[in-house]
Length: 139
Image (cartoon, helix red, strand yellow):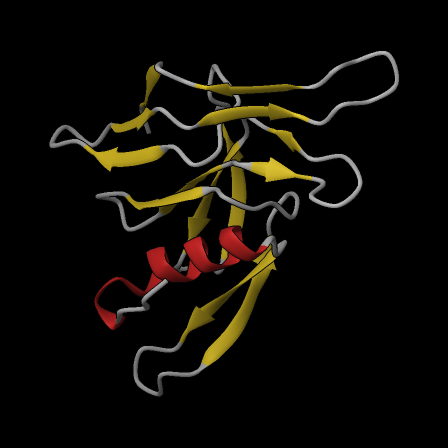
């Protein structure tokens, strides 16, 4: 992943989501240094971050439980740069990871494609499905 200063909040939230961190760093504009933010609701990976017109960042979940029991989640959260805090927001209708997240001109975010994964467990063969579905997030 290439980090660009132009969209600091998005790349930092995406970086945290990509490596499975529960706490994302924030960057100080003048010094170019990282400082911790408040914690996300859970550590996860393969989430997608989208900078909203409000300045907040939407992070839509991907996978949780990478080592012991990986599964796709449908959760979403908002990062508030002004307060360095995270809050939950409405969940996606379908758990997905690796999806696209595109900000539309009206402020909605289109979540499209991705995969659904549920780790095999006792009595459950597990699921891996490439998704052809899409959904809209309305802030």
